[in-house]
Structures are given as C-alpha cells and as structure tokens.
Image 1 (cartoon, rainbow, N blue to C red):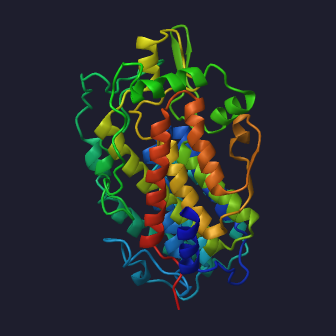
Image 2: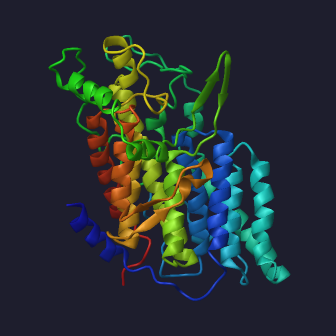
Image 3: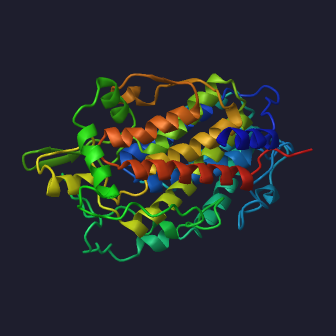
Length: 434
C-alpha cells in the first residue's frame, strides 16, 4: 500500500533535478549539524527540537527558491504562512548565502546557546568569502528579512501559551502513566497537542485506535504485551542490543552515581532523521534547492508527527512497561534503555520515523540504500539500510528491545506515522506541476 501511494507522490513532486552549479551543499549540511549540536547542548525535548528544525528549514527553503519559479512557497498551501515572495530585495543577491543566513538567524532565535551558532556561522559564511561585498550585504539583509517573517509566523503557533500552562496533574486511575526511574522526571510537553500543526488539519486528525485495555489478568491482551516486553528483554542478542542503543536518542538520559545525578547529552529522534536526510541527499548529489526541500519536508513530517503522537500520549496516558513489570512481575527488572518521561502510547519513534521515511522515500525512491553515520559521534558504528522504511521499522522495534514500549504502541505508531507522512505529501507540493 505504501509503495503504490508513494509512487503517486513521486510523480506529483517530479524529479528533483539540479539547476546549475552553485556553492557546495556541504555548507548547508554543516549548518544543519551545528544547529543539531546546539539543540543537543541545550537539552531540548524532542517535540521542541522538531519546532526548531521546522522554522529554521522553512526560512532556508523559502529564501533559496525566491529566484526559481520551478519551486513554490508554502504560502498559499499552508494557512497563515507569510508571503515571502513579497519581501523587498536587491537585484544582486547570492541566494545560497541568504538561505544559510536565514537558517542561522532563525535557529539562533529559538535556542538558548545562541553563541554556539554565532561561532559556527562565522566559519560557514567564510565559505562565501569570494562574494562581491555589495552582493554579500544584500544577501544577509534578505536572509534576515525572511527570518523575521518566519519568526513572526512562529509566534502564533501557541508555543508561548503552552509555556504558561499549569503543571501536569497525573491521573490516579490504575493503568495510567506515572514518572519512572531513575529521575522520576515530570511529564514532558503535556500540552504539545495544542501547538499549531503544518500539514495536519488538527492534532487528532489521525487519532489511532485505543491501546489494549489495562488489566493485570495474565490472559488479557495488555498483560500479554507486558510479558512480551519482559521475556524479550531477557534474551536479547548483541545485534538487538546494538539496534536499541543506535536508536536510543534520549535527550533525558540521566546518570546516577550514589546521590549524584547528571545528564548525558544525546541526540533527539528528530535530530537523527534530520541527519539521515542530510546524509542521503549528500550521497545522492542533490543540489542546494533539492537538499533544502528535503530538509523542509522532513522537518514538517517530524513536527506534525510529534503533535499527533503527543496528542494520543496524553489522551490514553498509558502506563510504561517498567512500572507494570516492577509492580507485578519483577521489582528488580530494569529496561535496557531508560524510560522517557512521558506516557507510553503511541511510540514516538515509530510515529516520527515512519512519517520521515515516507517523505524521504517520495524524494529519493523506495530502494534508496544508505549508510547512517549519525551515531558515530556517540561511539556507535555505522549502520546500513536498504531503504528509509526499513530504517524506520528498525527504529520502531528498537523500542521493544529497549524495554520501553509494548508492541501495539509500535505497530499503531507506524500506521499513525504513515498517515502523517502521506498527508504532508498531499498538502505540500514544492515543485510546480506544468
């Protein structure tokens, strides 16, 4: 089913052909990596990280396509999106330079450690050192103007309103989520469903079926899934342990040594897929516009994926395997991975990985093989995948190996993610159809 639908969207989007020679896309990829490093440094939650990627990549894309009529803006496709084409600009502009500057200006307004981006932007802008001074100045002014417009749009997405919400009240009903060891961290982003989506009509557009009803009866579907987690994690192979670790992507990982607690800064799951988008487009030799378009569509899929997933998480508020297993099976059992601080159903990795994979498949093809180097910075080896969907499937099952999700959360999360990815492709068309 996915294959047939994706073929339709590949035809609609058209082949992304390189239009002339320009500066190396390595500068754009470096900009993405530096934004990711700053997000990791600032320990943003996965949903908030997806918001940063969205607006930064929207700014970059909207700038680079200003001089190319074969690409079209989100204006007119997404309700309320600003008319970037109406921004006044000088005749002489280096659009890749303006694009990367718009990316940095936007990202710097959304992170805490702005100085980290300032350091990197000076190095990357040095890649345009041969640019005529007048053109250089015009380009920065345009990039800043686009960034200002995107930031104005971002200000109406309800993010600031969710910062003012009251502290989350946990349900006392049996089977509902409560904080887990070792940090017993409070609920993360319980009001994220109130954030304005991009391609989705609403947070609940692709509401999944409810999770299995909570029950401690060993014959119930719920307890069978609990027991599957418990038994499966007792006999993991080295490959399965590696898979769980490779896709861990937990920004909340907490080290505990006696009375001392300290965090290990890790990549968010969205950051992992942004990395995959970059590696794949670079290996395929895509142009600056093609690459920027891929980053944008991936960002939209991640952003809407977290909104949809978090909507369900705090609707069903399902208890995590660790809590149930400790209470009814083995109080000393611990999952391979640390349980993240939010409800179980559906699996966020399954939702956003599938959504991103659907989008990337529409751009680069169903059988696009790639090597994923994302986790080498964290001491893990390169993994090879024959397709984006196979990578997303591995990301999903990794949560069962890690002991932090039931099978239904993974399976239903993948369905949810597929729907979101296809909705992004239905709603957003970046190449004009002649």
